[in-house]
Image (cartoon, rainbow over all chains, first blue to last red):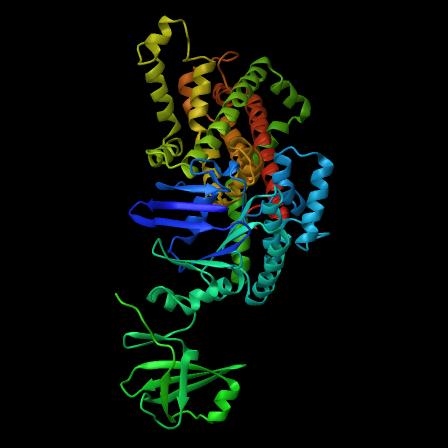
Length: 318
Length: 270
């Protein structure tokens, strides 16, 4: 295991940010810490980096006890949510910082910085100041800076949070390719379930300072451990005590034994997907996701009465 | 006349009346009888001694207050030390307190029968009516400027850059030197300039503790007052005032230049 946290607890005054949290992160993997704001995911990342000291619990990095180690000695690369660029230094100086501190020979520093700038597609921009870069460029600079001292693990705090949607999607693809090339054990924090599902080998779902479930994306989606995971990861309808994904709802014009009557309130076409918003005969609201073809075949209209059948209902005890 | 013009000329006229006229008058009076007279007045041994003493005090007070100011600012913003809130409030005391009161307090403390004075007197250390007293008074009144400039900038830059440097392997001293100090350097420069202006110009507190002996414990501001009071040496008073005013104007000019450079580089807030 590249990173282990055992029974980590951290309080800020009365607020319990981390409540007995344990995770294991495999060497070379890409792991997401997913949760709503205030769930403790960023705090856990900062405890792993040594930027916060846990009240209790242990942290191991590459098999070595790191609980009491200063951040300087952990061999960790950290990319901050707002990138924390050194504003008074050029892009080149930013990336070189970790190498110069280690007093690496000048030509080695120069070579490595140029390599990294090429890698993050900032070749030729070394002389600029961070203020002269776009958000996406600044983020890649921060990544190059964190990678420069060749860290054993890379920690990313909401790496795409401050970017607009298009740049975000591009950078995700790019980060995936980068991870495939470098194989640095990587943990990233996100509140965006889509981002977690798309990028990671393994997802740690957090809520209120606790770990709700640790699983690969597919398993997390298909076999959520509890109501929180079910509702936080992927779209969902709650019907009485049961949960059902909108794409597991079938609509038909004729009733059969197991259907319920509902009226179509709204039809939203989102490219390939068509979303049908419904009100059931008992007043319960729900929505179904159909493919465009399915929706067209059914010839649905607003105000139509349809019959609803659910395919994979889930109930959780407790 | 539009309202905007009224505001513009009104404020300029007010400035001219309140600020420019008195300062201009000083310059005019000092050079009224030509540069030769000015030079004779300012090269008088008492005037030169006063200038030297004032600079000697500033040269010690300004660096001490600057170092204290940066450290104190860091302590207030970066470390959750119990009681730092009180320190933050007390630092402003010299701004709120009349300098005369400061002088009187120092006088009571260091007089031959004062709290510290008794002991110091027994050990042959003279504070009042000597360099140490003047220095103490000057340090007191010019204490808050660097702290007040540095604290808001430290708050604004936050700890992210420092944290980033730490994860990259930098130790505390390197972080301070390479990250924190460059980020607050213009705030420090502003603070130092203000501290300097106050140290050179202080009158009230120094007047009480220095004794104002011509050629011995008289500072520049006291020399101006003494020269003018006697009536015998009005040109001397104007000449010394011009030197003080010139230093102040130079200081302001430097601040403006620094301010512009800072804007063009976009170091603050960019």
